[in-house]
Amino acid sequence: MKVAPKLIFLFRDDDGFASTISNALQPSPNSSIQRFEETFELSLERYGIKDHNASGDAIHFVDGNGQYEVTILLLKKYDPPVLVCALNEVLASIKDEKSSVSPTIVLPIVVPSSNLKVEKRSTPANHVSVYGLQVGVDTETIRAVIGKTENPPPSLQVHHEHLACFLHLVRALKFPSCVLIGQSGQNMSSNNLKEEIEMICQMGEVLTSISQLSFLREKVTWNPTKTSKETKEAWRALYG
Image (cartoon, rainbow, N blue to C red):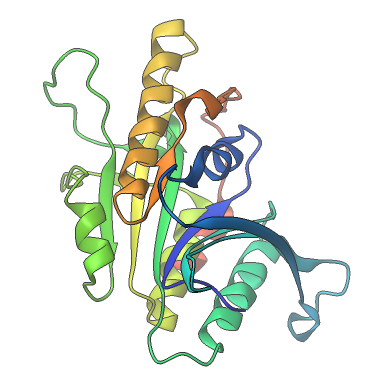
């Protein structure tokens, strides 16, 4: 699968986070960048899965010379064990593309507060944290992203199925990567929702720092669903 050297990877979700990020990232008004979209579908039969394919959407931003600058990849929502097979197939197809340099992958993700444990510390009022986690070798893109985010505190623990799969596979396939981690679901108050929208906008602004793109705040829509603290992720242990 052909992608740009800078790849923004998104998992489709019920809350609309992935759709919001992909819709709000647009070419800057004064740039020659053009946006075009395509779908992809990859067989999972080699994993013994015949009733599902690895499918999703690819949004490419191409300059005036036809060079791919940034790709946004949105993977359809899957549950384990299909999730890890679909993700592996997509990443393997990118790895198989004839290129001398692997793309740098940036994964923005919002984690429910029930799945994120971090030691409480004093912060300014209305402060919104977006953590940046580097995976693998350093690249210019990773430095740009990490430089605009907070370092995860040593006490940070994240229990999230999709993130666990992603971390395991990009390490195995040796993709230079980084993860943007935001938190949601502390409560459903209007103030908290405003903070979550601000967190999404901060993520969007970080993503524009690696590209000639703009993040359009007016395109941000956010309707988080209530999550259960009893939600089990029994497959997470398989992925490290």
